[in-house]
Image 1 (tube, one colour):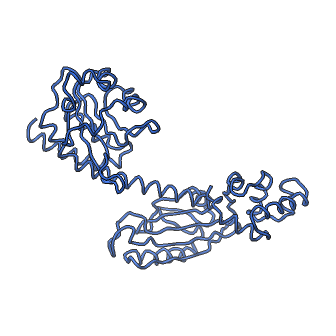
Image 2 (spheres, helix red, strand yellow):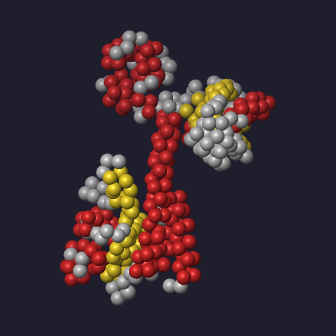
Image 3 (cartoon, helix red, strand yellow):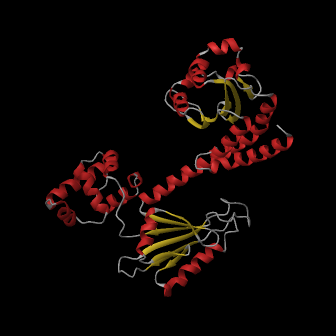
Length: 385
């Protein structure tokens, strides 16, 4: 391999490594380029190692499509343990044991031989765990078929040069996944609470909105999105909203200043007014003073619709308080603001039956008034279920 080709390939590989976490299937570009550079049959990145209770996480390019599934299901158990690998992070199959011993091993016979693999290159990355110390983070593997030249020292050196970059990209990916998981959790929680959420960037343009906000916006009854801008559907009153958003935008560059604006939105249809809360995102999340990141969440807008039905689940109420089906269903009707008479009519039962269920509800929840019951249930974890 010429030095010019190596330099060009190395640069492309580094670029692909850092783009990997953002790809739909992470690191597919990198693995493809890596496979082509080393002229392999298959390459794989083991992100999470399989166990009896966990099929692991494995990204592959090339090879038998059933090999990855077999590895996750059963073949991982015969893979040589990391404690037996050489001190250097990059090693080949023949460095684990002599050829005769390796050929007789279960690992070779069950995992490699069926795919005609004769040469295997592995590169391990590690991270420091506060509890367990230095732990294996991931393993990059490349395999060549029988009859081809084994991996050269130059190819091993390329892997060693790539490892620090791969290790950092893996750390970025881990943080990215954690943030995305938290975001999804909070978004789901807002939905369960019946709150619409709209996220704007530093220019007041739409970045994201949840399903409840989308339903409200699609009705065009009080609020609309046009050209990625949030507007009142009644343009005569829109200045109030734009001024509130602008006041929040003005404080984005200041870490310790945060503004909250609250507005009521009249709906042309005559339905109950929407309530909106506009809040600037503290710049400590996105950078230091006067250094917020462009295009990132800058303004959060929460929308409440008084006519939005409660998302509290009857199953959760039953588990929390030991309620019967009838009691749980009555609790949901009370949460929606119904009186005893209205709940009886809705359920098709007598008022005395509802009063009996309500008395049992009081006993099981530890309250004695309907207003306190509503307060207890609306603040319970059932609203997040």
